[in-house]
Length: 108
Image 1 (tube, helix red, strand yellow):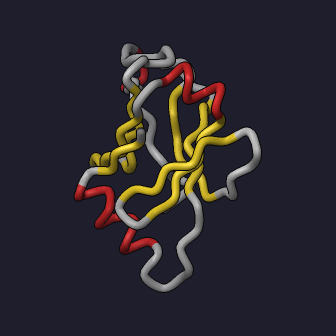
Image 2 (cartoon, rainbow, N blue to C red):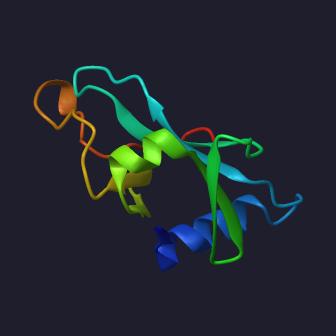
């Protein structure tokens, strides 16, 4: 399951205010000093994806990745979208001010 916070929904509504809604992919992005992290991008689902409809948006994620992450939550921080999983994929703070959650510059 993918849950989206109220603040993330507001941010998505603002982004799509002047364009047609597009499916949003949750994917594993390569990490810097914090290791790989979950992130968001606009993309159409494929046959290897699970699709979740939440808060008026369609989110897709590769089935194998979702089996590793478990439930996912999407929120907004001062750095952008934060995508967190029930089973973290690695990474996690430390040097460079990196965080274990991802941010989505792709959708902004």
